[in-house]
Image 1 (cartoon, rainbow, N blue to C red):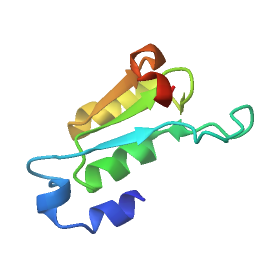
Image 2: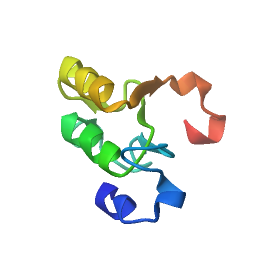
Image 3: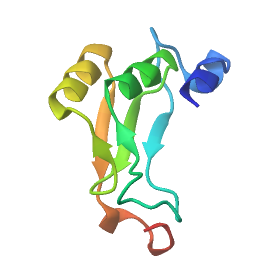
Image 4: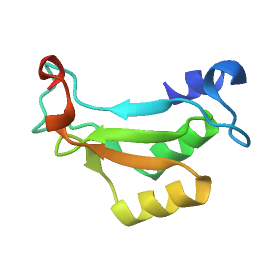
Length: 96
């Protein structure tokens, strides 16, 4: 998905070296079995988001696995992206 996003015109997605636009949102599908198939964010996710010209990555707290928090944070800082954990209580009732 990130490689397809990187192929979009920069006016839609932003630039990896200029103004970044858009956010990658990671959360489980409504029918996803989270005990064995949890969405994940790792260094490769951050690198892909940067190549796609996105501004950052968000994930629903407690429902997205972050692989090596320190490495993800370091990579995001180096590439100028944000990583944000969204509190499920802040979601509208029909989205939680």
